Length: 427
Ligand SMILES: [Zn+2]
Image 1 (cartoon, rainbow, N blue to C red):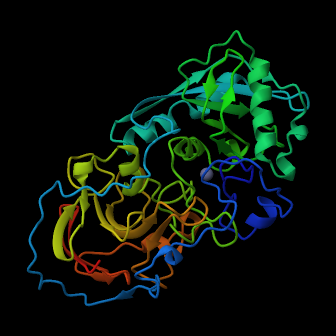
Image 2 (image 1 turned 120 degrees about the vertical axis):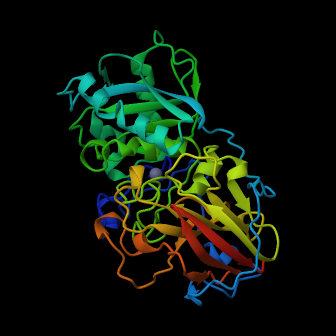
Image 3 (image 1 turned 45 degrees about the horizontal axis):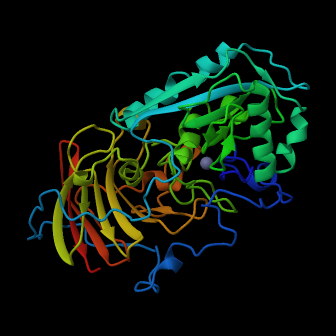
């Protein structure tokens, strides 16, 4: 979901009904939104470039032979190139314990017809387990029910404007109604993120939405990150919805387009900030770097022109190995390479090997901040229910790829699941 503007988190399936179902054309523009929501259409990734403005993402393959390299293996750590904008200001903790306080709500027109325990059990283990694996044990998601019963909202569910397009004002009104109904006797102290979870079958509360607008609980605690869940938690995306929405609280953007296009057009089924139900849902190494799950020493920063060689291991495997090659194109834009396997939570992946992509910290969520480079264009892809054409975008050992951005990657070898890459940079 776009932060706080009330539109649906994602379309329910990879079909072309997104605009009509989840993005009614009558959706009002919020007057106050999360800072990553542009008020005007930002430049696309390629438009943000200067020196390579005539080049596009129409990458073309080069020679498939790559044994001629005379470059040397560069030891880690290399020079850091972490984006300066990654301050974590206003973001929920991504390392250590993230405490999410839960208010379960029902409505005069949609009273609860399950127990609170049934809803809690639905999300009590899977999202925390997923984060533990994705973060290599660095993040502990702790879910804390603020009350052991439903809190009755003061207004009927249809009064909160979900079906007409939730504005940020209506969203905050909904959150404040829940906080007021809970009352001052409940302490929210120490809560990093507030979850408001509706009764099952309160169908008017349709889509999950995150906001970074400050709200104040009745006990005086100011909460900077709130997620209001919708029925999509139960009937579309399941518990991974929690990992997607909490990703926003930790500072990650949406990777699917807010306006037009296919939900998988930029990242396929990679990274659940794109498609929650994708076939390779682990966060990009780029995001793991941002969140502190990958150390600086595990990022190979290509700071010089010419050929250099690196070895990186699969992101799904906890290790001290290098996990990401980062080639800065500017102070905000990068060409990146990581290794995707079909291990762990990515066991359903149909594309394994070296995954190339670009990232730009100046491009807003919903506008394509990350774009996978398809090294198998027009292949037909694989698993169209979970990402489609880009799902097999990975580059196999022995192949090379010219990104068209001044960087050519040669995958010289695969060694026990790790890959050796020669990077030829003209940046
Ligand atoms: Zn989202």
